[in-house]
Image (cartoon, rainbow, N blue to C red; front, side, top):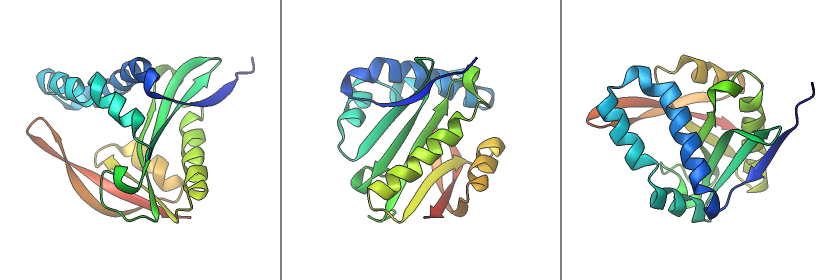
Length: 173
């Protein structure tokens, strides 16, 4: 059976589906590594409706759902200029999130989204693309390295009061 894969750009009205997919995919990846109370508090804050609506309305951020046979399989979030989560300069595009729902993993959708991010980097006249990945997320680190991303630093990320480390990875296009 041939599956139809398409990317659709989100607008501020898509916040509810974005929230649902964000919570599902974040829990799938990070639940085993965090206590339930810390995870619940993080998810409530990170994917709060007004926060998502502000992110969706930001002209320097873009979200894209990847859909398989019209079902949302995951999404991509990219940032440029002041929307970047780290000051990486105006010649960079940040991939803030590539989230794939569990039922759709290992179907090439992450590849499709990273290729879209590279295309958006070029369309926005940026020379580099970067992202942060949790130091213990071996599948993600391997995935990005396969596409030519190299570690250039790190920063702290907090789950409650638990300080965790994200590796910063970058690719020059």
